[in-house]
Image: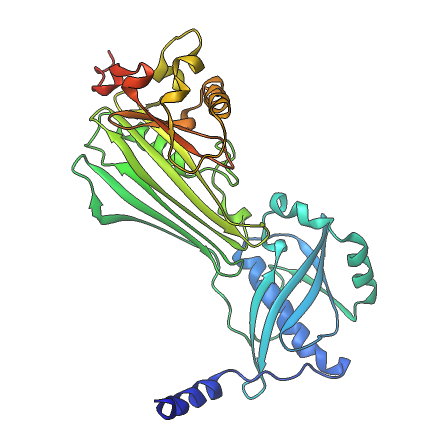
Length: 366
């Protein structure tokens, strides 16, 4: 078996692109620097980055990495990428490793002043500088494969249409240059399924397309994110013909973060009115709603290593915030959700916390 595999292995190794050593003299760097400049320009064009910049080059250290400095009127940014070079075809392969210049100006501002002294020293020692602009022509052919720019896909999953008229949709955003991917699976209603389908659908989209980290006011803008992934999906916890309640789950992992993150967000909608309900809509005008919830009736849906007093404080905080995202309903229980970043969930029977009226479908609003 080993002998059979050997020819295949040798063929695979021989098919890999050759990696030539870096040019040895400054006179041989011009071709490399020109292709790197073209690579940067392609990134500016794909990400719609305007303005004029100056690029500072250092001697190439090897055939795998390159570090540059980009100067604009609003800061200095490192530029790092990896590359290989095939001498036989005179062809490069570039892969972005750190390119904050491709973010919108407001998002890249945090990278502009970092390592200021090191950047100044790099600029002073640079062996070449060149102007860079997305619209200016560079008189040289591209000798590298251009990585695709950001793309967005949205589709309705044909196999995931509910009898109620609710549809499951998928949104996918990919930016291979900045190595960022987001996939958001979310529900929507067909126009004929509900009298206020558009209002309900807008509420649902707001619950899934929020800013990162969790921020309902920021809005979804994937062009501000790099080197990571986000996945969002949901579970319908209650749908009784009028009240739709669901739990949104997020998992994300970013290179600059110490570890992956995950959290839950709740949403309960009155589909007759299109309104998102808050905890006070569920609990009613009780004098001390935190005490009325009877913390002892709740059980954790994930590991919990703290005492009952901590749970009471958590429930009181949820009620004081009176937020729509801190809970969801099932047919027989209420689930309270802790604030990010921990977002632990606690469930209690509706009958155990004085919410028997929610065991049945509420009458339509008049």
